[in-house]
Length: 209
Image 1 (tube, rainbow, N blue to C red):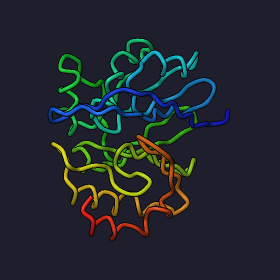
Image 2 (tube, helix red, strand yellow):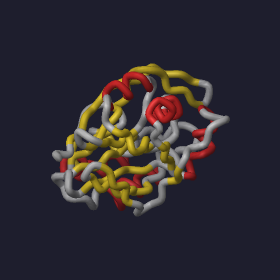
Image 3 (tube, rainbow, N blue to C red):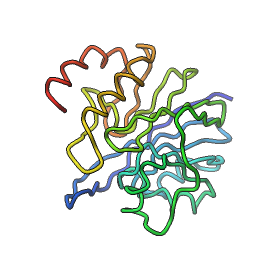
Image 4 (cartoon, rainbow, N blue to C red):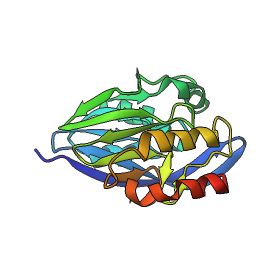
């Protein structure tokens, strides 16, 4: 069975601190023809379930709990029977979107999620959100960074629950230490690599975002 990574782009709105923005999100489906995991169930549970098709959905893993990354998670869990996973430090954010339904499981730094031939290691990378995580699979040479690292720099830190020095520390210590050829698959926008982003760290620190 060959492991593959599929990208589904869904559209909706991100809401925090009284503001609302239109956004396109990357939903990542990782696995083989029998079973998969979904990383970030954004906006459209039915579209994600359709992309999963008749495969078994093992887990819905949330890179963080901003509403645009988790708003479809409970509905997708209901459609598929999958469990929802979130780092506990993001429960306050989660409850802004889903006050009546907690995640099923808590993610922990260093934990390995095994599914369909993948071994996704959880890297706790706070800064964009307190419970933000990235998921690294050395076998696939890929890290799923949510909104921690993008092509061109760190995720936004100008709103509640975020902190620029913390995200810089997370990126420097947890991500830029990965092999340079590691592919970076992000929560929004285009992919990049660790090697393409690493030389720009000082520039990001100087500009402050």
